[in-house]
Image 1 (cartoon, rainbow, N blue to C red):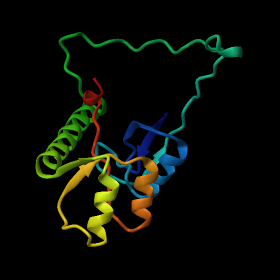
Image 2 (image 1 turned 90 degrees about the horizontal axis):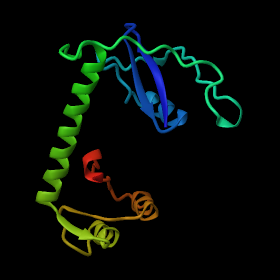
Image 3 (image 1 turned 60 degrees about the vertical axis):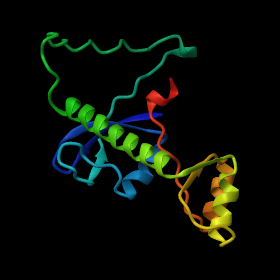
Length: 160
């Protein structure tokens, strides 16, 4: 994972995590990275100071930055950070709602997912909403055949 400090064309600053630098480039190209403050898709990387690690990973070669003053406990978060947290909560709620809708309204075909999807696509079985399990290779094969598939959203609380 890599964290980038970003800014939009209106000079709003924010951060986001990406699986890799190529994932960032791909998402920006497809206009999937937007400013959480104004919604602009004209986003770029801000100048960042790298964290230098000393020889053999024994610790930082340069002293870590001084911690920022912590607000009083009674102070409510405000600004871009609280906006990002609110947007993340809203997005997670929508993803959970989507997943719950699919689980409620579709048949779980388990490990037979690829075979069932393929049979419906080629007219061997009647179309119906399904979900189940497929390996990455099976999913790629389905997509290559023109069969639309999408992973069910997984949320952090699902891993507990």
